[in-house]
Amino acid sequence: MNTSLLSLIGRNTGLFEFDLEKNSNKLLEIVSESSFLVLGGAGTIGQAVTKEIFKRSPKKLHVVDISENNMVELVRDIRSSFGYIEGEFRTLILDIGSLEFDRFIEFDGQYDYVLNLSAMKHVRSERDPYTLMRMLNTNVLNTQTSLLKFKDRGTKKYFCVSTDKAANPVNLMGATKRLMEKVVGSYSKEIDISMARFANVAFSDGSLLYGFEKRLSKRQPIAAPRDIKRYFMTSEESGVLCLMSCLLGYSGDIFFPKLDEKTNLITFADIAKKYLKSMGLEPFECENELESRAFFLKTSKADSSKWPCVFSDSDTTGEKPFEEFFVDGESVDLERYLEIGVVANSLGSDEFSVTEFELDYHELRQQKLWSKRSIVEFVCKYVPEFSHLELDKYLDQKM
Image (cartoon, rainbow, N blue to C red; front, side):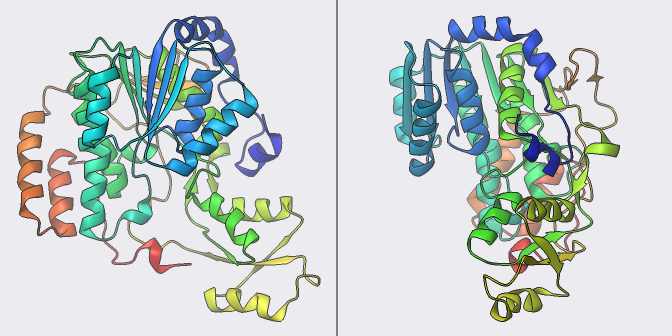
């Protein structure tokens, strides 16, 4: 495990090593005798879980994603790290909501395990109704539709990834993921289903930490909130959590990392400072964005070991001061694993009507005159715990 990365995200040791070692033989046996389909497999978490499956030599491993460039890099990474397997390994550049994907499944749709990692994951996307409708469609409807394709095809387990932001959600990304848990969970008596609620994956594509690397490479200032605390995992840890939930979880289980609120919650500003110091740079705190952008006009590359930063309190819609993995009323099992908690038997509530949801969603979609308010009201109907606070300011309006 990369100890320098762990120190950046507030930890001294890696996660899941004991649980992984204890279950290593069982995981190897299951993978080596099974076939897998990974949807959204070219994203950071998708690539991580694909590699965890590949290195255990599955009989068949198909990976689907719409990102051609990321898929090319995934294949190069796997070939360079692990080489080849006797089983069939294929990648397909397909949209899982497309006719082409439907035809592919009709032709070659027999899998023991299906893992869906596709998602719109950014709070930054919480702005216009068109993006939000796509988020609702991607996070909920596409997941439901893909599950139905495999419900009667002999698939042993359907796994999909949720988020810590689904617990007491305050933004639409988290609320749509909570809605996904409910919709998908309604089928848990017809097909085995498990999930995982994640911490932030450090330096994942598009994340703020990933943005730190980009800002340095482009000689630009760093901006981060100083009052928002988050839990973090490495990409490798995210792959292990997905694999263990998929292969070892009971139907209705949601796995989450056991992270300590007192020692593992860390602010983005603190990570930014640690990151700059790890690069041999001293954070130079600026009063505002204008001052930070002007910094490089006054300082030559050769002269400065300082880097301009803007650390401010959060004032944008959708930001939660801290994250949590479960809420009051959920049945939580903290004894099954050393470093993995389980929200047990949480899916498939009789109170949730998937038929009513589908009718309401179809009506909303047919309106075609969406507003953010109408989308929030729709989601609140099915996720009453959604506590949305509209501040009329979004992350795209900040550096």
